[in-house]
Image (tube, rainbow over all chains, first blue to last red; front, side, top):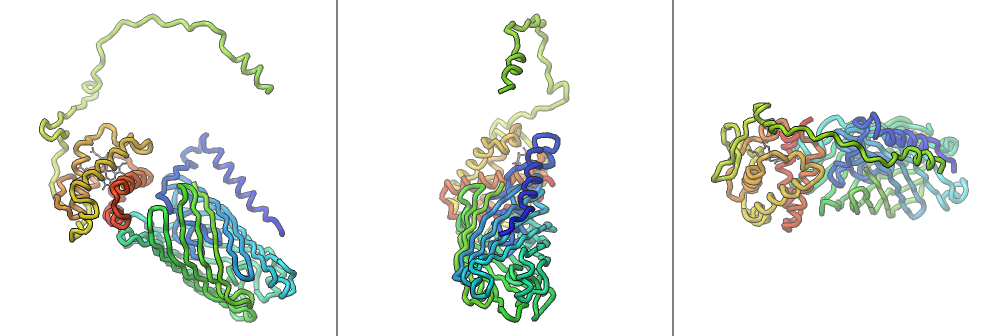
Amino acid sequence: MRKSPVFPALACVLGALVSAAPAAARDLVSFDSGKLILTNGITTIEGSGGGGLATWATISGMGTDRAVGISAHVTGVELPDFRLDTHGIAAGIRDRVELAYARQNFNTRNVGAALGLGRGFQFNQDIFSAKVRLAGDLVYGPGWLPQVSVGVEHKRSLDAAVVRAVGAKASAGTDFTVSATKLFLGASVLANATVRWTKANQFGLLGFGGDKRAGRSVQFEGSLGYMVTSRLVVGGEWRTRPDNLGIAREDDAKDLFAAWAVARHVTVTAAYVDVGSVATFKNQRGGLLSLQLAY
Amino acid sequence: MFLLPLLMAAAPVAEPPVEPAPTTTEAPVDWDKEFGVVRKERDPVTGEIPVDPYVQSAANAGAKPYSGEGLAKAFGGQAGIRRITDRALELSEADPRIKAIFEEHDMVRLRRTLFEQVCYVLNAGCSYTGRDMKTAHKGLGTTRADLNALVENLQRSMREAHVAFAAQNRLLAKLAPMSGDVTER
Ligand code: HEM
């Protein structure tokens, strides 16, 4: 498995920012951890702030509009024939800008052997993302105005030769997202809708574009959650996906989740996930477990 | 470890500092007078400090009230609401994040008007007689983080009063749109 040099580099930059805080840059880099619990969202398997599968308009970290915030996550998705592990960090600046990095490791287990890649072959991918809040607020302001953000997610497969052999046109690609997210307090309901312009195959793990379609297409992500208490949200998500590769059909991804803020800075999410057919192996339904630390 | 001798060298020699001779006592300065501050007296009946005149109107509450009696019941009627708003202010006055903002303000009046506002919005049989939110919070310099702290204190007081979480959120739904008027950008 190749190690990404970016993760430590990003950590260093953020570390430097943090340690500079007591000095001159106090106003520039001050942590207030002032968001309401859970309103920072959790972390998607692509590293951006959101639900589990769908990117939301929320900005990662617990910082409010006069502070910065930071979060880190690890997520494991256990499927009948595969396992996906992701980890990453994200920074939120003044509840306006989110910068994130995530690494995905996708273990093909026995499928790897069947496909001639070798048992336990891993597809690895780096994802760099940025998101900007354009308008509105998740909780406050007019009840009809959601928080609206636009984002870019740049994904780089670390297995260029293999994803090309599978039929992908490219080993790197960029998704563009527009998200609207609102907590409808009167109903204790959180709703999100995201439009994604993407050419990623299986989130990009199997490269970008294919014989059926080489370019981007418009996809949709929806999330609905119910706030049971101020620390517990249950809900479901639906994410449509392109179907670019002739040899391996790709289905919509869905989940049912429960996100629990164990403590102010710690959120644990458990979900039932159904991603359909992956690399010709059908009915990939399993469990997701995610841990997020946020300040 | 190499720092130790350095530290010891820097330690002050034990010698009592020379105390300055006590200055002759002057009459204390009346700073209020110096700066032209006029202290308003509390009303002997209500215990409140009078505010600048304003036009009373239900619209000052900043939200349309709910209809029906469900929410008033969920909050334990006027007695329940008073306990909740008093407790939220008590928690906020003790909350290191925001207590400084409440110092030097008329908490007698705030206890009354906040109660009236919540009671009015929940349709529990009150009229709101206070100022509008923009006027009342002008110049306080409150931030989004302060607002979140206040909301947390209100949530805690509602939780302590065993108000169902969905009903708690119905109240917050009426207060959330006021954010622009009660905080500064
Ligand atoms: C939606 C949230 C809020 C509501 C519904 C609310 C409600 C009220 C009401 C009804 C008054 C009295 C108006 C009057 O005297 O006529 C008031 C005043 C006041 N509020 Fe708020 N408030 C909110 C947010 C905040 C926040 C976040 C703070 C600070 C942490 C704050 C601090 C104060 C102070 C210090 C006063 C007294 C002002 C004075 O003495 O002139 N309020 N508020």
